[in-house]
Length: 293
Image (cartoon, rainbow, N blue to C red):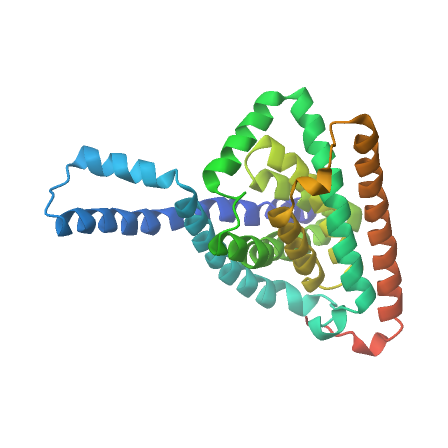
């Protein structure tokens, strides 16, 4: 019964993130309402309730507002889950200190793996899009509305810094930390990956996030430091933000289709191999290990 209870406790971080997203939206929307009213008052225009609601709904669907809301939630989640992880999980886990977690092999492996998985996940998304074009259309509409495809400073700051830290604390920190108490490592990695997919709340992102979560969970377990998946996540989002058509040159042609697929698989394999080599070199110095990160 205790093991079952621990298993269901693993679901709590995901539930809390969904609740937190809705709670954060209340004050942010309240500030938006105040801004709209003040703007009309400065212009000497009295705004009706219907017009206020209409303008608020229009604002909610704009990219900058969605990014601002996402960043506000992510910062709140970062603070909450960093405190949770530090107080409840980090003291009971043998972790590699951040200052000792990396070497040139590990950093380069994360970069190679980021490139490789960009290609592999692109093929995964295209395959899903062929099977379910309605899912792909919904995903495309979401990306365009949210402004995620843009490279504005606010979007980049969120995607490259805030989101990787907060999401890794939630899923590879707290969720995975509790999952390992009730499941073997492989099972815990699979569970946190599935929950990471559910967190994205749409089918296309959910499937590729779950797939990506398997690799990130492995990096966290084998690397022994939460800093490693955070850096990988930042690399992956950075490449995704600046990826352009040249990375997928003429992918629609059979030759280039197979070429980029081969490149993606080889880079992914090379990244994993180099990561394992880097970990082996780092672990030749066991004195660098500590019970705290």
